Amino acid sequence: MILGLDIGGANTKLAGSDGLFAESVYLPLWKNAPLAEVLKRYAAQKPDAVAAVITGELADCYSSKREGVESIMAVVQRAFRCHVHFWGLNGFVWKDPLELAAANWSASAALLSREVGDCIFVDMGSTTTDLIPVKGKARSPQAAKTDFQRLAAGELVYMGQLRTSLGALLPAARIRGDTVPLSPELFAITADAYLALGEIGEDRYTCDAPDGAGRDRVAALRRLARAVCSDLEEIGDAGALAVAEQVRERQKTLLTMALERQTKKHDLSVVVAAGIGEKLIAEAASFLGLECLLLSHRYGQKISDVFPAYAVAKMLETSQFL
Image (cartoon, rainbow, N blue to C red; front, side, top):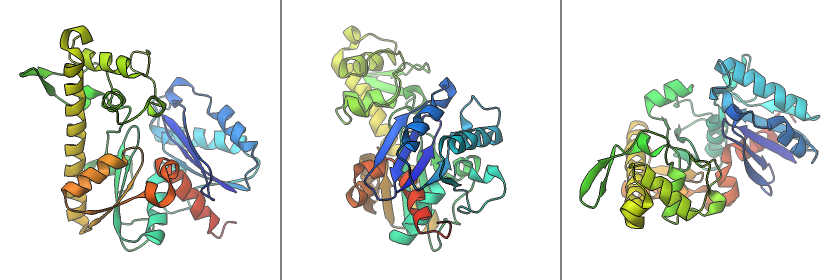
């Protein structure tokens, strides 16, 4: 079995090349999460080889992307006794560690180019959303290369289904006929909105709650009320749910706009959706009249949630390096 790793700033995702194993572990690197300890636990399963992509270099515990990449590489190499292969923008062949920075989308694009063909790959996770044009050749030469360039090109939208602050998404909400600005404080996150709406369960709330309190529906409603400087007793469940519904609609609008921009720019009509935000991606694609393939239907929900980890494992499985 080849073990695929996608080491991000907030989550480390793992998948086997056989598709029988997939897992996401909340490991916030900026909080000194025990990455080495967790990786050693999986090393005990004795994989034949490890394929890794790195996206955690932006964690602010590192002074630069280079320091982040090199630090994460060192942890991975120490954890495993088998061969470890790191994927960069040009695959497993690279010269500078900076080529590995935030290259997880490239592994996904390479596999989809082979197995699906031309498409826009949209992956919405807990923190960010990737919109990657896959057209013609593997490794998606149309896509921008760095996070900075992808932000500028609209291929990286910095919002996700769990960790995004509501104040960063929604300037104001309509509650009881009033337009109420949202506080820019980190009182509530998108996980609270989706939990309150019943679109995720407590088991899918896999990040820290802003107030360090519970990750149940009542606690989420309280945080939603706090986002408009209120208590739940003041605006009631209906007021808190109004905030949640408008947050969801705002994310759908932003995603639809980003998807429309990329499909028109690259003349693509097929969307491949992955990640915990698959449902929202499908709704945006449907609104635009685009065909949408859900990777949860093709590979299963667990693989869809950690697709770059699975993709890099599959790419190594069929590479010249084994």
